[in-house]
Amino acid sequence: MKIIYLLLFAAVLTSCGATVAVDYDKQADFSTYNSYNYYPNIDSGLSELDDERIMRVTDSLLQERGFVKTENPSFLINFFARESLSNSQSTIGFGFGSAGGNVGVGVGGGIPIGGRTINQQLTMDFVDFAQDDLVWQAVSDADYKESFSPERKEAYYFSLIEKILSKYPPEKN
Image (cartoon, rainbow, N blue to C red):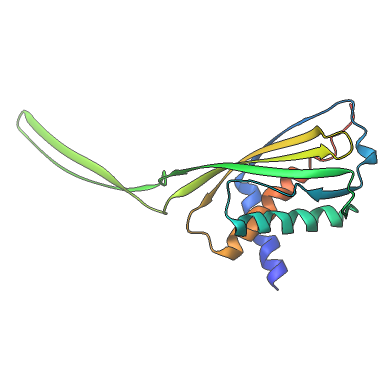
């Protein structure tokens, strides 16, 4: 049941629209990359819990596609994020005013609702292990609520990384 909830929530988040831009080495032979691991010292700028969520989701999605996690991989994965915090753009407005004769007075304002939002730019790099060359990079831009529960954060990362990995390997032109 938990999987169904995660998948349903991931579908809702996907429709909310994270954007993903990809760049890659046109000379790289992506058919040779079949095993992976992570850089030993990832400094993502995120919490350790978020790092673990990202790695757990990435492992699941890559292994589902036939990739093997090994100590002697064909590529290494690095990721890092930049985040900024903003208040909700949704507000409840209120106002009052008076008009009489040739004089008019009005006052208005808005109260933010919905809590604060985190804009996250997540960059994921795939680096050729033997050559130590960056061969593929995805940069995503998405928002999530600061108040997300651990389950909602898991669903957020599942949706986001699924969208990122949908662009790997790059299509040949």
